[in-house]
Image (cartoon, rainbow, N blue to C red; front, side, top):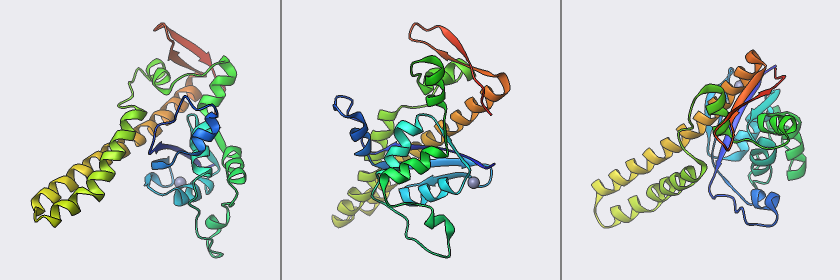
Length: 226
Ligand SMILES: [Zn+2]
């Protein structure tokens, strides 16, 4: 069985005050998506169509909160692969967002959904990483949103403006800075993907994982992961 791990970052933060949270997630768009699998190693995607295609070419899709969040973002993205009869991967992707979400969900193993069933409440990835691996997350979702905005603006707007006024050195520097923010964003996304992989492996070996609760206590939860 081929497993693929994935995580997406979005261009905007979710509006937590919106009455319909599912609709709020469907309205988000991906800034970057990262996958890791033994067959392809780490891959970075800036468009959803090739990402969806890649995910569906694997037997099991693994992530944290993917059923509620990432799969929804991908399914409601307007971007769809161009169907090529010679390439079976492109034929796998349905046009209907509901159908695509169903297809992604069927193949998904969502660590958060599994833990929520066992615990009766949700846990954060940071709390789980700290409790199980003793590791801190390197950044946060809001940081990723700002980094993406900076990367896009620095890359798309300012180099041209500076070139137009004859400042080529300035244009180069701004481009470099944009690329630096893009790299940080992609590194952070990959780090979360690898964190989920480590937590899954930890759970398989130890038959339990741990998280830090709101009072700072380490709590253990039994799992039957494979
Ligand atoms: Zn692969």
